[in-house]
Image 1: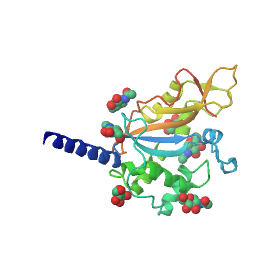
Image 2: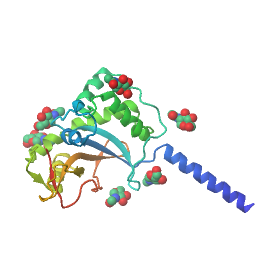
Image 3: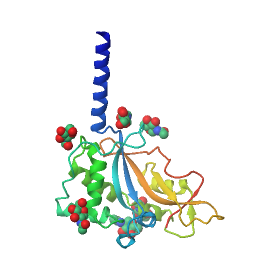
Image 4: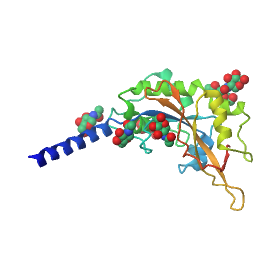
Length: 227
Ligand SMILES: *[C@@H]1O[C@H](CO)[C@@H](O)[C@H](O)[C@H]1NC(C)=O
Ligand SMILES: *[C@@H]1O[C@H](CO)[C@@H](O)[C@H](O)[C@H]1NC(C)=O
Ligand SMILES: *[C@@H]1O[C@H](CO)[C@@H](O)[C@H](O)[C@H]1NC(C)=O
Ligand SMILES: *[C@@H]1O[C@H](CO)[C@@H](O)[C@H](O)[C@H]1NC(C)=O
Ligand SMILES: *[C@@H]1O[C@H](CO)[C@@H](O)[C@H](O)[C@H]1NC(C)=O
Ligand SMILES: *[C@@H]1O[C@H](CO)[C@@H](O)[C@H](O)[C@H]1NC(C)=O
């Protein structure tokens, strides 16, 4: 008797966990903007599709969870319906282009299906794309860096905190950065990494910006190239 009710409890708990996971348990959002020249430089996709635009563009809005660094993904939500509004579509073509493969719709579809589905209980498909556009449009990261004299350069490097404080001045919150190893790294030269992405964090409803507290996206104490 005791054993069967215990088994029931375990089973019920397992179902509960599945439910939590399928509805996409998240606590905050990471709004990720990429630096297209770095994306293109590191891309394995055919280079004739690349668009190394000299401005930050949207990569995605990712519902995230502090205790699970891999974030919820591919949740059981509605499939991508396409961007119906021509007005929103033309905005997204500027803010959220596919700089690697040249198919914007496919990029949006991939981001919605992988990430957007995990926060559908809070923001629906249309809101997901509108909200992302507003986040991109609200603070111009390219300009925030330029205001701190951080402009693309093949030779100059910056520290993690140089870049973070420039963005913090503009957004009043702490961003986090994502870097990748510099493929042009000279073995004997000083170690450097490339700035790939800037992440702004938002609370559960994707309305209010909050401090990001994850810094694992770059090596500490390795200078950063932005070009
Ligand atoms: C984070 O995600 C895991 C796995 O999806 C989930 O079990 C956990 O409850 C989540 N944490 C929070 C605070 O939502
Ligand atoms: C969620 O998954 C269940 C079971 O696999 C399925 O019946 C349902 O249609 C899915 N819901 C959505 C919105 O995809
Ligand atoms: C772009 O991607 C969409 C959605 O996946 C697809 O329907 C369309 O055929 C693709 N366009 C081209 C030119 O490959
Ligand atoms: C953002 O700032 C850059 C650099 O000042 C500028 O070239 C670009 O037009 C701005 N973008 C928007 C959408 O305002
Ligand atoms: C950059 O500086 C100009 C001039 O001070 C200011 O108007 C603008 O808001 C700043 N841009 C950002 C993104 O902080
Ligand atoms: C980040 O902040 C959240 C919420 O305050 C907290 O739960 C989490 O432990 C923090 N993570 C780190 C790495 O400081």
